[in-house]
Every structure is written in C-alpha cells, then in structure tokens.
Image (cartoon, rainbow, N blue to C red; front, side, top):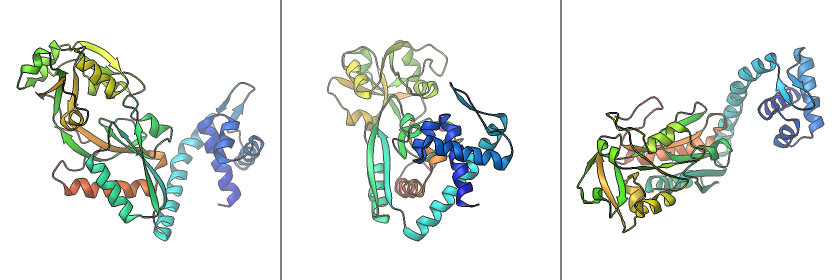
Length: 311
C-alpha cells in the first residue's frame, strides 16, 4: 500500500465518522479541499461513489457503508501492530491520561507507580471524570482509559482488569430509623427512597447504582436525582433519601451526620479499567498490565471478562 493510498483510506474513515468534510480535515490536519481530493481518488480507484454530498448533509452510500464496516477494524489492527512494533523498538512513551470517578484508590495509585517505574519515558495524568457520565470522557477521547464503577455493557468499550470487590451498604442520615440497625436486607430498600444519578450515564448503569426494585420484585421509591456523589451525600445528610455505597467510598467522603449500614442481598460492587476498542494503544495495554500485577498480587477477586458475571 503506497503512502497515497493509505492517506486516501484515512481520509475516508475520518469522513465516514464525522460526516463533515471540515471536521474530517481538522482531524487529519488537512484542508477541506484536500479531503475531497483524497475521497475522489479513492472513489476512482474503486470505481463507484462512496459518499453522497448535498448542500445540507453528507452520508455514506451503501457501498461506502460496506467499505467502512470492513475497513475500520482492519485499519485499526494495522495501527495497533505498528504501535506495538514502535513500542518494542523505542519503549512506551508519550502521555497516558487515566480517568477516575470520585477518587483514585490505592490500587490505581500503586499501578501508576509501577507503570512509571517500568516506562519512565511515558508521563501519566490523572483526570477526575463525572460521576454521572462514566463513559463519555472515553468516547470523547478526553482520557485514554478510565477506572469506573461497573457494570459496562457498551460494545465499543473494552473491559480490562476488574478489581476492588466491595460489599454494598446503605448510606442514610443519622436521624433515619435505619441508622439504628446493625444491618439491612435488600428488601428493606422498599421502605427507603434511593437517590439516583442523572446525566449521560446509560440507563443500565444508573439502575445498577440505584435499582428500582428489590431482588424479590418490591418497588423501591425513587428519591432525588444528582449529578455528583457529593450532591448525593448532601441530600443523604439532609435526610432526603439514601444512597448505595461501598465502604471505601463512604470512608473517603465520610460525614459525621451520615451512617453507613451493612446491606445483604445485593451483588458486590466492582471497579473496572475501561478503554475504547478503536483507540487502544501500547500505553493503555502497559498500564492494564501494571494494574493486573498490582491487583492480582493482592488478596481479592480474580480478573473477570465482560461476560463473567459477579455472583
């Protein structure tokens, strides 16, 4: 494949994803006219139209859709292979941006230290991502990878190391009757409004953090909605509702007017390292390996795959 052919394919892929000649050019640092030239060259090489362009919109033809679906994973595989070869030749370098929700726990910090020791030419940056939008920063490429609360069911995201298994508990105001209990069952949630997350997080993820029914099917009253964990804890303190939390999160954000009551009958919570399938790099793989070394070396759950359900 000549460099010209490679550039034609790169221009087509950018245009297929952006559906806008200007934005495709910005991604590739090319002028809009140059993107048009590369597209025409590719269409001439294939012998058919790949893109329909009007004054109002840009869209792929059926043949363009077919080319995009087959080309995207193949092109990404080529880039990943080149990245791997460069890594072997030069080592991991550049910048790795790691997102986290709330606070980066000890496992993450230890993994960062190990990663830096193994790859001193690669800098790391930690970025707090919104509690209400765990996957958006990955899709928008604001971070390279992120440690998020599970579950994750997005088909274009890779779930790497799963760690920090923690039993769930119910955070309530110290004035709430539940604060006097030694423990609660999941069925007790039917008598307590749960504060839930609003925002860009997918529905399945929000329901995992604040279910609408108990395991036996009783309705759980809906409490206020929040966008940050701090907002939720403020409402708990004001006795406006309760929140499901794990002990480390509650300890980190601990408030004297909030009581954490152990809860049985719900699956444990987990953290997972997630990145975009199409944007995987040697840096991400190296950090995932460092996190696996740290978490596998500590007492805790084994690594899980996406289809490996918690008990």
